[in-house]
Amino acid sequence: MSETSPDGQRCPATRRDGTPCQAKATASGWCFAHDPAAKANRAKGGRATRKSVRALRMLPERLRPVADILGTALREVYDGTLEPRQASAMAAVAGALVRVIQAGELEERVRQLETAAREGEASA
Image (cartoon, rainbow, N blue to C red):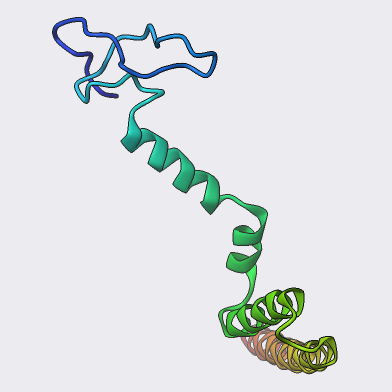
């Protein structure tokens, strides 16, 4: 937490209702609510917790480029620079790619479980 300004100075900001802020200024010259550095950090924190950002973090690393391409295609269809048919074809191919990746990951998990089960039986 920032220290209060030594001279008891008030924050120079104006509140939403148009009245001057009455809070004591910190060492930065602003109160904690109006400090530009704090505002930037709060905004950055809000962007990092958006649902879309959380969803992308949960997406496997190898599928992130696919999501980026489809996001770009969506914007281009909206802007009128990409035919909806092309975007539909891209989405269909991406869906097939995701299913192949999921099948491969599932196969790998089954293989690991079978290996662990065999090792468990051998040691028993």
